[in-house]
Length: 270
Length: 286
Ligand SMILES: Nc1ncnc2c1ncn2[C@@H]1O[C@H](COP(=O)(O)OP(=O)(O)OP(=O)(O)O)[C@@H](O)[C@H]1O
Ligand SMILES: Nc1ncnc2c1ncn2[C@@H]1O[C@H](COP(=O)(O)OP(=O)(O)O)[C@@H](O)[C@H]1O
Ligand SMILES: [Mg+2]
Ligand SMILES: [Mg+2]
Picture 1 (cartoon, chains in turn orange, purple):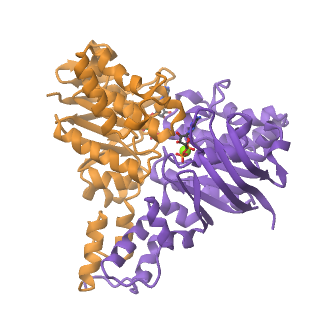
Picture 2: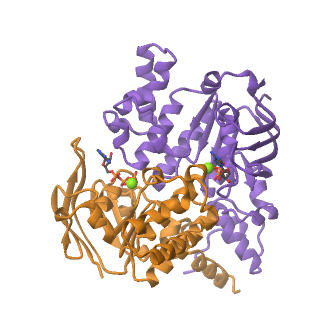
Picture 3: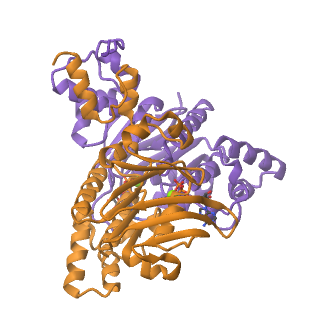
């Protein structure tokens, strides 16, 4: 049971860049949330604050009842696992399995539990067949799954995925969708940053939108993708389906392929 | 008609790999064409880009068979540097495309031109122009290592465009970009085409490929399995076999077709759906 609370959090980098202003956000235990928005909006900064890699300049970040400023990053990351946006910032072993095994082993889990978590995470991420490979010989998208597995294997209550959809093909996106489902069943909180609006509509009900250092909206897909003001401010586009529905002059609210197909068929009396 | 990129029966295997990663690939690309390479992950797209850029076999050893001819000259007859001026290559991972020797974005973008000995005044003009084009003027004084993912990806593209190479090989340039930023990059690529550049783009965003690219090359497990004009390839039933994402509108149209709806053609752009369904936007709520 770990809730996450950011209360009026601001953050500036050492070079003076103000990256985040007055962010207030709570994430309940077991919740699944997407963070979307403009490049440079402060999304990565916000999640690095959640796992203690960064400490707020102002405001407080609470992980359960811990104020992150009173704990080390190593301590906080036992509760909040963070998958880096750039996989190469994270990988440091010469074979995939050692990379995944490192986290749970380092947490001091029993050897059987380490084994179990390592294999579970590799399976879930579809990388078991690459167990002995050097991560650097794998395509970027697969390296990303190596880093996801490494974090999942640590079995933290909260998991943050920074742009896992980047560069994924259709199969990769299905693996991610399935993984979200499994983590939900295990009551994990999962926060996912992504620029893929189809993925957001397919898998998330709660969407946090950021632009210009601030939170712009925190709502469901219907509300966000039909709100022109929010979309423009945060450089977003609704999923392609919404665009098609509009061109066909259908009433607003359609977001998924299934919905659109149904409306087209019903209109043709099929 | 000038052929800029010509591959004849190219096969390649990395030093440590058991299997060939590129298998007997042949194609020709005309000067001024915008071709997109699509295919699932691990199908060999990046390796193919490395081959066109000459990193295979100049940097990555391994076994290379067949012939790679860039602008009428065989790969083996180029120096790697010489080829670098002709073929601009934007890496898949923007995080690795930073020189590491420059401490602000302006100088980072200028670095390649400096190395070529371009006069300082000209460098300034060209860099200014590119910063504006790629919309990173506001980042000019930032350290290249202290940028967000999307910002780095724009800087990586800018550092190549500024060199003004004849051929651009761009490996997934929008993977970290927000949706509007992605469109802006496609507009820039279109502009490069208008300037007569030959473009090879690896992308997963099929809606944008359908809108912008001329030709499609489909990779599957190291083989080039389909090639042709974008519209023809997406409309070919064979495409479905490879489990690659379709443009979203095409996916919907094909599902409707399976459910018994007649289509007058296979749409690949959003605005074509109405026409393919033989309707002209009659609202259902009236
Ligand atoms: N280490 C750093 N030092 C200084 N400024 C930084 C650093 N990292 C990021 N920034 C700046 O902070 C702002 C927010 O960056 P952040 O990485 O949080 O954005 P983001 O929303 O994750 O963007 P993207 O979608 O491009 O990944 C940007 O203006 C960026 O240039
Ligand atoms: N440096 C390398 N050494 C060995 N094998 C590699 C290397 N780079 C890529 N590969 C392998 O080559 C195949 C194709 O990879 P890649 O060209 O990156 O595919 P794509 O870009 O289509 O995702 C994969 O099986 C990958 O593991
Ligand atoms: Mg980021
Ligand atoms: Mg690749």
